[in-house]
Image (cartoon, rainbow, N blue to C red; front, side, top):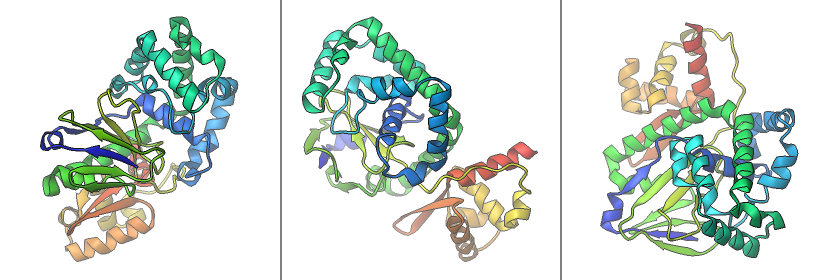
Amino acid sequence: MLRFHFTQEDLTKVRVATEPHALWEIAVSLHRLQTREGRWAYTPWFRTAGDSLRRAGLERTVKSFLLPLFPRASYFPDFLTPPEGTHGLDAGLEAVLATPYERVASEVGVLTRTVGAPAWAGRLTDRDMREQLVDALRAYHRAVIAPHEEAIQERLHAERSRHAHTLFRAGTEGMLNGLSPTIHWRPPVLEIDPYPDHRDVHLDGQGLLLIPSHFCWHTPVALADPGLPPVLLYPLHHRPETESHTGSPPLSVLLGPTRAAILRASATGSTTTEAARLAGVTPTTASHHTAVLRDAGLITSHRHANTVLHTLTPLGAALLRTERDSH
C-alpha cells in the first residue's frame, strides 16, 4: 500500500497535469508490452504497435535497450520520468540528458539491486550513452505513441472537465475521492491499494501533482525517491477502444437530434441537468438517452453524491471528430 499524508496546506496545492506527460506515457506503454493484463482496453494500439516497431527497425532496441530500463516491477529509475515531461517530449528528453551522473549512477544501482539490470546500464552515467537512450525514446514515441496523441489529448480533456465539475461541487477532497477504484481518500491520507510495496509519503506542504495517464493500467505509479517533488500517475477509465470509421452519416441522422445534442454536450463534460438543458428535454428524458449512449460505448458517466457527470469515450470522441471533419 502507498499512503500520501496530507496537511491542510497540501490540499491547497493539489494540481492536475494539463498535458500528457510524454515520458510517463512511454514508461507505462512499455509496461503494457510486458503483460497481457488490460490488453482489451488497448486492442487497436496492440494491433498496430508491433507493425510500427518493425517498420521503424525498433524491435531489438525495445527488447534489449528500453524494456530492461522500464521493467514492469516495483522499481525503475526516476530520472527517466522527469517533471519537465509535462511540457512535452523534447523538454522531458532534455531533462533526461541533463541528469547529473551521480544521480544516474545511484538510481541504476537501485535498479540493479532490486530488479536486475544489464551490465551496460552502468554506462548511462556517460552522456554519449544517454544520448543513445534519448534517441531510442524519441524513435519509440514517434512510432507507437505519436499516432495516438489526438485521442489521448481528447481523453485527458474529458478528465480535466470531470475534475472541474467535481471541484466546483465537492472541492479537492471530492476530487481525490473519485480518481480511480484503487485510490481511496481517508482524510488526511490518500491510499493506493494494491501497490507493489508499502510506503508512506509525508507531503509536508509540497502538495501533489496528479498525472492522468492513457497507458497506465489499474495500479497508479509514484516516484520512488521521497526527496523528489511528489507525483501520482493514475489510470484513466477505459472502455474497449474501437477503430474509427469514415463516411458516417450526420449524428442527428445516426443517433437522433436529442442524443446527438447530448453527445456534443459531453465533449466538455456535462451533468444530466446540463445535457437536458442543451438538448431541450427534461432531466428524466436526458437520463434515458445518456443510458443509451453509455451502453453504446459513446460516453462514460461518473457519479458523485447526487450528480452524474458524462464525458466522451474514445469512440464517442472519434464520432464527433468524424462529424467535424465531414463539414
